[in-house]
Length: 131
Image (cartoon, helix red, strand yellow):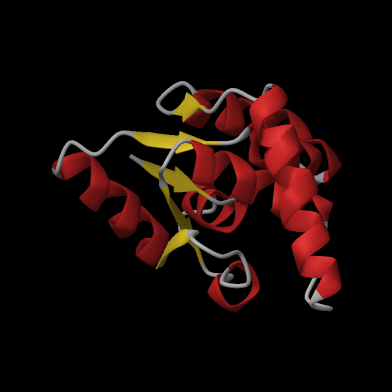
């Protein structure tokens, strides 16, 4: 499975050709799409803040029906602690939300599809695919 970061989902919802082709290519090969609860929150924050919030909330609702949301429980919490500590010791912290996303992607053994590769590559063992 591949886990979609917020940037590719926003681009897809806005009709970005490159994002649409990338997501369509996963579907053509039968690859299950997922995202994290953190990314879902970011999508809804953007939708509610937008000028056309009612329409954008509906778009997010419809899009999320087609993908799986990774569960968040105690296991990723422990990993968040470890990752945060390691990154802070190295002076390379990437922010709480991205560490939360990374922990779920690692635990579910997925590939994170993002444009923010330079940011996420600080997480050891995190598999990334740039779109």
